[in-house]
Image (cartoon, rainbow, N blue to C red; front, side, top):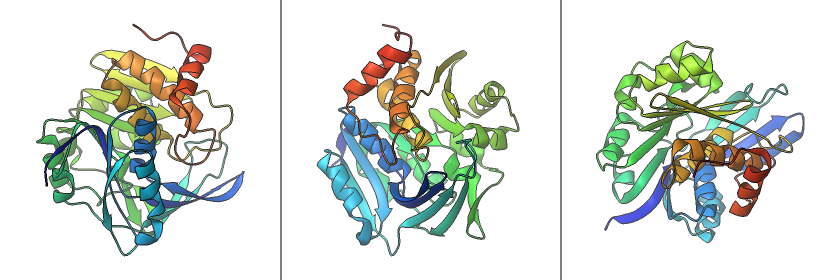
Length: 298
């Protein structure tokens, strides 16, 4: 199969999410690849998505294709099914149960996709192995990864955080690493987000994206950049980090970290106002930046 050039590619299992919060119980089409591909496509980029899901959930594939995303799929006996419970108003506090999994990716599933940037978004450990990471990295792309897919493991049907002994082997291949405040503390032992970002950078990535309840920080080299989240309402917390990483990496294709973080924070703010992926026009992002953020550098 001939290689095709994309601006950005996303890899991850589709997740059929049941979200339980004070607002009620809702079923939402999730998955880091889904949140990421939707955001990047609406930004006007050439996007590829690599995923695994059951035929019953093929509507997700068709929705992405309708946006112009090239979707490379593998049909599986079951989709990954998650139940996400938010017991308090703190968006960083949640309990996640796993009912089923679509399984693991193979190096062959990424070999046919060539892109400037590649974002890996597994839901938990076992979905993306070191062989897949090495295959993507060998193509010379800008490689981004969310640590949630390796620090989270399934134990008795529930996601738990566990030590990641191979973190240095994986992250040595990664250019941009993303974690939320909870994951960063678990992985580095640092409750302070700035020290946690520094510890993550020492594992190899050139840039660290760290989300927390109030916003996002980026450590790029020795420079720290920060931007707040300003959603009018907090309905769509699930997918916050997936969207933020996707928007940041997508914008970094044409801008520096200082501008990319503002773009990512604004786009993520709009996404959090509703369940599911980002569905606004990019003009809405630009307007929010004008209203709530300092002008990005030229």
